[in-house]
Image (cartoon, rainbow, N blue to C red):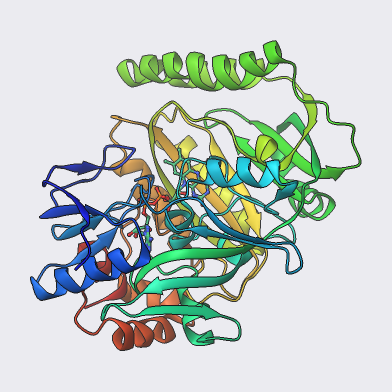
Length: 439
Ligand SMILES: Cc1cc2nc3c(=O)[nH]c(=O)nc-3n(C[C@H](O)[C@H](O)[C@H](O)COP(=O)(O)OP(=O)(O)OC[C@H]3O[C@@H](n4cnc5c(N)ncnc54)[C@H](O)[C@@H]3O)c2cc1C
């Protein structure tokens, strides 16, 4: 038996501080063989197994009372194939390490979310996405996966090999096995020009289809209690690179988005009545700016202000109706919302439990500053989303269960049948999976 670095049991917490778990033991395997051994030993000891990423899910998707597998020794690039234009990375590789390593090689992912703290396996397991007209989530950029299944077998899946596993495991919510390596499509690094511009809610919503159609990556934030939005359009550019100046980027990304925002959120939490005035002031303080840089520097930025989040994918053609209902709900209610609502899009994809599975989607995300009671706001938002057959992000707060989810995912049964085949004893089960997938 190989020697594996096992830690004594200690509490595990997610980034938002909303989930705490006390695993029976924590293991950090340093190779696929060691990991398979950890899985077999847990099975023999009657313990369940859960791999974690960097704990950036707001849900208890990664929580376990059994064996927690930490990915810190399973990181790094295994291979770059310049003919196939793919990169194979160890499952625990943080996205920031992947992005910087690819950039050094003159390569890049096509699309990504708005931070890069997550691990590649953790991010893709919940369907982490950015915004895109043609380009979809990170999972959609996967070309092959290697995973250790419940019996300790190492299985490779791709469109050609075990295609039924590939169709499900790219957004597998940790239910099908422990991913050990991910092969992703890459392309020669390119430049994106970001154009940020304040715009009124009425104009963004009436021009939404056009804004999405005219831009490779369109997103916007609406500031509750105001009619103000900030829009962001990212499009490929021939260059030259023109990154935001150091001072202006520090002011926009660090001081306003993190420092001042943190103070405003703390004030709003202590005195909620101040929130609408703060929202009006801060949304008016925004100014237009444009810059050109390599993809990960345009797509992602640091998020130091801790928050809780709910995000639903709704059919793209219902996005504006949903947003108007959401705005009307906030205006009717006594709620005071300090965080902007974020709106992004994705094209339909072919993964069974991807939130964009089989339908063009718009993502609508609501946030609240950590420590602010979120139940009334999130319940009211969820009521609107579910009335439009919304699909919750697997890593963000929601209250849906298998009965609801099987209605909004036409391929739900395909996923659960595969789970029955690969993990009949629910070695990779936890309370969250029992709720969303059933027993
Ligand atoms: C500040 C912040 C910003 C965010 N921005 C975005 C965004 O722009 N877009 C978006 O879509 N989401 C976003 N999210 C959500 C986040 O991307 C997802 O929740 C993601 O799953 C977190 O990745 P992680 O590495 O932290 O994984 P964890 O949260 O630790 O785990 C997530 C799931 O993956 C499973 N898992 C982890 N490793 C493996 C493995 N090796 N094999 C099998 N299963 C595994 C876990 O068991 C769990 O089920 C954001 C979250 C935060 C806190």
